[in-house]
Image (cartoon, rainbow, N blue to C red; front, side):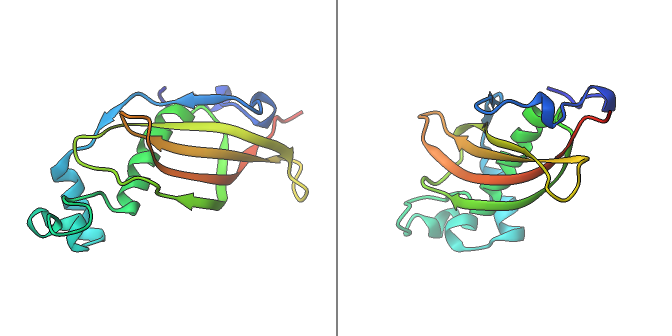
Length: 154
């Protein structure tokens, strides 16, 4: 999905508890993964393919921060039509399986809960479960996110 026009964006009232969306797949590129790690998280098992062979992983694995960045990139493809204000909290953040170069990944969200904001009637609160999966349906990243979204005016 591309960016939605401002007037066609989905507000709190348009979202449904239990609704899910899933992104198209993305193949993880080794050079992009290494470049990110060398600049942002240079632990040897993220940034040095030779040294990583001696790690418990046996090869380079993606940093958790990079894994989240990939999830975010894919999530924008499936969430750009929602009238987001901002995220306010992440809960239960997990990386149960390492992401590796060559993995084919996809992002998924599930709307867990909806409610009007108690402090501002123009806003609503959306609880989402976000997940990044690989080609074997293994969960690479998951969290529950609390987000603010616009409510319909009028």
